[in-house]
Length: 106
Image (cartoon, rainbow, N blue to C red; front, side):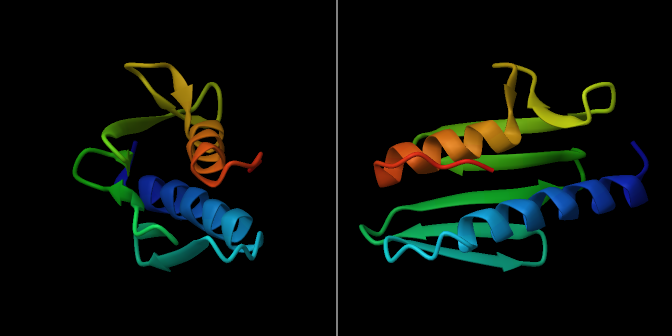
């Protein structure tokens, strides 16, 4: 994928997550988007980080002891972690929901 296209697609994905999680307005979760890094800070001190890694052309996510590298798959129009075949939005919703003890959708 061309650099320009990567920046556009990754920014759109991070902004979508920021809006979706930030819109929950939960005391237990603080959502901060700064450039190409989205930080999810939890009341217990835990942090999940989602960032656009332009050199690899991927969106990376670290949550607890687990990390994912998502590639954009044009045929599906989604960011997919090739090792686990997980989709970015579903994965974020699942891990954040599990951390908060509530169902989250993006």
